[in-house]
Image 1: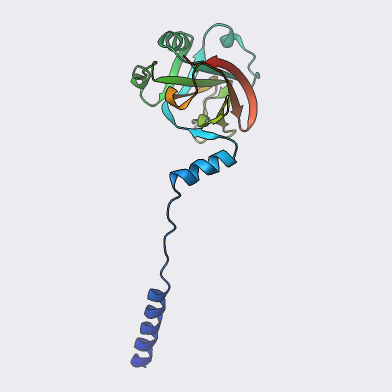
Image 2 (image 1 turned 120 degrees about the vertical axis):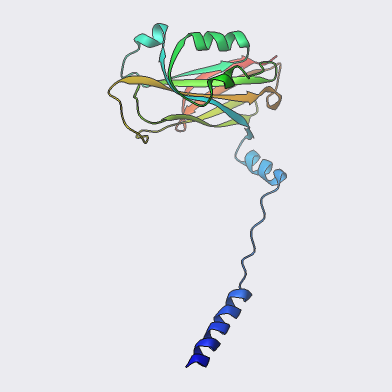
Length: 194
């Protein structure tokens, strides 16, 4: 009986060795770029700067509680970044606030968005991807309807901010920045990078 079990074990071990799985190689950069081109654009690398919750100032502070409106910003200079930050009260932050000071405006631009309004719960808004399609720059945002976390009994605007290298985008021509929330166009802006 022991010999039969030992023989069965050796046969199974031999079969396991004979059917080795060969890992699939990672796609080459050229293949990845070709896939992006087939999808209609080239993925632009973005760097997370800050997320969280804000209370906008000015007209946005008086917006209808049921507005369901995305406020999008294409920030290309230090002054524009200061003006944007002066227009909000950052209440809760995810990430390092000092990362905003580290943005070199001659090399990078900032894309920011907040959504009016949501009950404070988790991290519902994020900039997921930035894609260049000729002279259109698509900024894909995800807005979770039921984010994880404890809900607070008041409304604020969820915020997402990323940096994008200017070297990845054409300069001297008008670029149309198209902000999509869950795949639907919600805001557009035209900016010419110098």
